[in-house]
Amino acid sequence: MTDLDEEAATSLDAGTVASLSGAAMTAGQHLTGTGGDALTVDGISVRLAGREVLRDIHFTVRAGEFVGLIGSNGAGKTTLLRVILGLQQPSAGVVRIDGADRPRHAPAVGYVPQKVLLDPDMPLRARDLVGLGLDGNRLGIPLPTRRRRQLIDEMLRAVGAGLFGDERVGNLSGGEQQRVLIAHALISRPRLLLLDEPLANLDIRSEQEIVELLARVAREQQISVLLSAHEMNPLLPVMDRIVYLAAGRAASGTTDEVVRTEVLSKLYGQHVDVIHVHGRILVVAGRGDGPAEPVGEDGAHCAVPDWL
Ligand SMILES: Nc1ncnc2c1ncn2[C@@H]1O[C@H](COP(=O)(O)OP(=O)(O)OP(=O)(O)O)[C@@H](O)[C@H]1O
Ligand SMILES: [Mg+2]
Image (cartoon, rainbow, N blue to C red; front, side, top):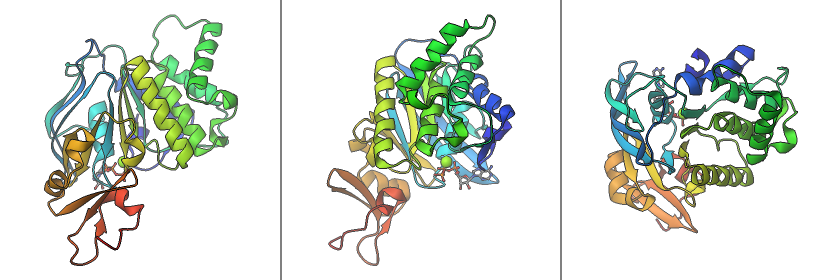
């Protein structure tokens, strides 16, 4: 578990793979209710090394919702996900999973961490890693081998990893590994799935495929998804709601409610323009006197037009 705590890249050997598998279990919480709020983040503040990294964060994720947690580098996305998982103690506030504070029963929160380094020399196939997700969730009588294999095959196919289930995970590309890690988190059938920047390092096609996959899973299996990203644009077609983090604070609501000049200017504490171009949204700081400065990577990916 400690490996997952590190901001540094997580290197997976057999021991840490077990930790990864256990993350969803030991950090997870049992979801008992039907419908309603799967996750409530209520007044969370976090101090790290004497600095307030998050201040009074409030939002909810309802059952089956796909929510984007958007913010630039250092905005506090990973810190917030770690608070939800119970890996980071907040200085104030509470997290409720399905209305309950922190019950200790079956795992119900799946987690795909931001950085996982999978050593090519590690003799672990993609299907083995997915299977660890299954083991972490089961106490007592193990599944019969055939049933176990069937479940793993189904999950590999569901995430588009059916063709490389027998490959060593360390040899897979970043996008392929991402699919396997998602399968690992999903196979325990969590009610809430937290993903920390799963789109980083993916090409546009893989990015779209992963987003569509997660949206489909959320819809079909009523799994609530909270996914962190720098860029909101790839998520616009599927996001039910957005939690926008900046300057240690958050605004949440639908994209139309949150990604507005007034709301983001207040959040950043300076004037921010929200620009819609070709179906994309750019968030840019600055008023035209002096160079406009992209705020976060939404803007950073695109040149700011001259006419601004
Ligand atoms: N253990 C720690 N001790 C002190 N400061 C920390 C610690 N972990 C994170 N921070 C600081 O907290 C802030 C938020 O970090 P966090 O990793 O949550 O950001 P993030 O939004 O996930 O960024 P990124 O997009 O780069 O992953 C950063 O300024 C970071 O330096
Ligand atoms: Mg992070």
